[in-house]
Length: 404
Length: 223
Image 1 (cartoon, rainbow over the protein chains, first blue to last red):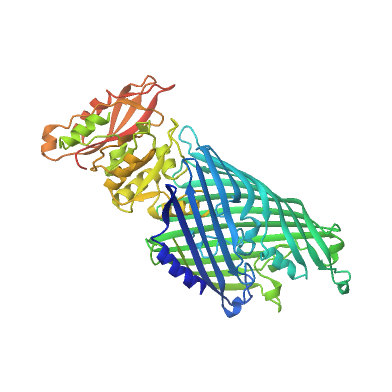
Image 2: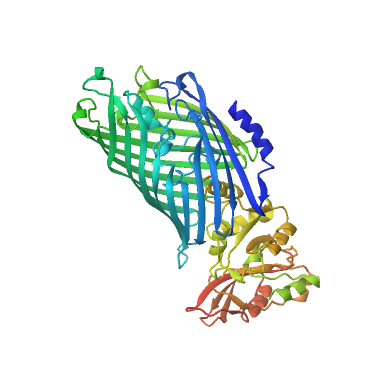
């Protein structure tokens, strides 16, 4: 329904996306997408997918203008519903003032999209990607809030290297991350009877990417450090009859390293990324949690003709976690990544058809092994799988969307 | 530098000569506020990908694209190494992540020339046959060396009457002082190549700390 509305709006807006204000050109752009997922076994991504679910909608709209040659301002609203997540609560996706002093030096402040690997900042924009779901080993759609943006500032620029060695783009950032009320991590916590009231904290990092002299090859590296605090209430596992008691957790060590490469030649695009996320939390002052999350993928996409793309990827995710202290009795360590609880491997085939310049349809098959687990959610939640989880899941994803 | 070319156009002569920017039937044009006469391929690519907002001489620049078509395709393929679809994704990524705006896209040679002529810092591309009145044509292919003096090659009358033209490619050696010391024909009609070599050897570039070797193209006739 909402998608249909945006489809109509988009068709109207396609020819009305620019206007003048105080002699400055103002651009308005937007997008919307609607997905449907059917799984043969487990319910996935907080939806009742084993029955087929269309609770997979998102849309956004932005406005921006160049105030001067060097100064640009803009903002974007974003809203989504993914099963139990998002729930159509609109959020300011980004709102930036961007001042580019030189090609090699710019600063932007406000709510800024975080640069981390190839697609963290653009993961919501389905129309930009061949795949309906980006590799979930790295770009977990249920955990987008973790990395999507920060309130703070970036410093960035581009430097041309001498001797025809290509060019380097860099970004450094610092800010505050604040997860939405209907994010995946909070939902995961609710399975323990916990209610997280606030979740967020300091986030800082850098990204360096090198467009190499080999035509079409880009390689890069990203690093992000976080200092996250969660506060809320939870059932006391030592005395469940006591009711809710205060709960808190905070980062002792929380970092992400990501390495990536992208190669394009004609109609072919090959991407590969590796991410390691290390998370050491102090839980309620009495316990310590260690999570070692590793993911990588290799993807290939080929444009068969102007309107048709096909693609495939292999995505591999593992998680090992250890809990020490008082809570270790209730949360036993899980370090064997060969078990379904310790991994999620996903083989994917995709076809995308662009019906016109603004409207596309994707059909995608996922063949998953494992479902991950531990103190960090992986798309398979116990609340929608009360009967327990099976080791393999096949999924059909159909998605359509517009942008203007 | 611009005037002899305009006179040639006005006189209806068939010869159209420039450096690499005319290869593949394209010329790169800029607003008169752009100080440079030459732009390197690397710099051109970064400007049109939105990575650079100024040239090495400090001039602010704004890229202007042509609507999807043969000229656009040839330009993107040769200088940016991307397809139109890749470019759309690139700019939409910038736009929707809050890192940039959609660039200006115009319908025709005439529209691009008119916009570039009146917009400070604008840099665009048009087909080689376009009337580039009111804009400057940028030479491409010699990174960091500004072309100070350019001498147009003779288009041998016999070849012109027989409509024999095309593009010749030369590898030139530029001394630190800026003189073209050597011009080696890499491809194209040998007679036109000889004519181009003779002209290019009279070109003078800005002085530099070290000699430069570069490849350039010169097109004769409507090719």
